Length: 374
Image 1 (cartoon, rainbow, N blue to C red):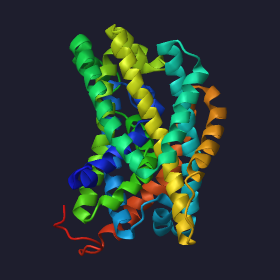
Image 2: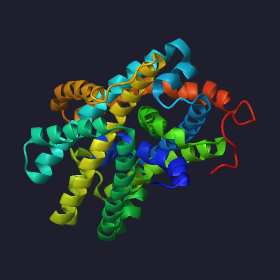
Image 3: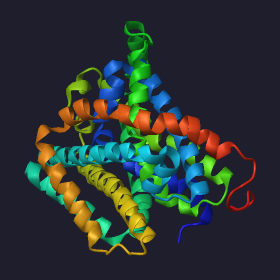
Image 4: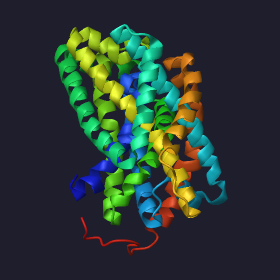
């Protein structure tokens, strides 16, 4: 059993990160589309802005969820948005389908490029593993998320250290040349807001972990940490990508370009195996949030959600996502994410940072638990 401090301060951030990483983040494709494509220096500024947005929104979200005792997105957004909460659900479901399609496309591309296996096999194995995890429920999912997140940090650290040892001498020159060629302009603000906005669906995924949190201090601390925990792998991966700019911008799976440049087939295979696990994490987290919302709705009517219903819900989502994967990783990220992000900004980011912040901090007293508990 994990220590109480781990469940209260770190677990929400690790689950948030697991949901954020998705196919595009883990492969490096999102890093390219939202950050590196506008230049190394502006991209770094956009990344910092996204992190600040994540931390602020997660801090308010976790505290509101603690006060509301809302551990799934339906009850949370009904309290925050009133009758219009269904607009968030529509946006969330559309994003879930898009993310699952991205995961499938990423898995297929990795299976093809790294292992020489059929594209369809990578898709089926990954999405099938998502359904299997969902069958076992919250406790198993928490354990898998926490354990695999540390595996992810391990291989990312190895990739970054090794890459910087090999190519780091050009890192400073790349940032300096980027700043000279394209000083900070408005695009970094737009990209930072876009990336921060649509990825905040991951905060809804992490709501089920808030049940471990007892005080406002714990909720706010966990939220602030979640933004940082979520972005740390992307930041270090970004540093490993910059020496390969601008050629890496056109790579379907940028991580493969870096791994091939390092020249170790063994490490390339290890990295992609861990990446497969992160794809499974993300798909599981997105659908688990839907299952938790359905289970809560049934509880309100005095009914339990049958265990077999969870993989059935997964099968419906995964079946629709399979029909979208042929669009390919680049088009799914470029066309899908850029559009849907504004829905999350309107239905989540703005309400939670205005009305939500007022509701969360309007009183000094604690609504549940004691500040001294930890």
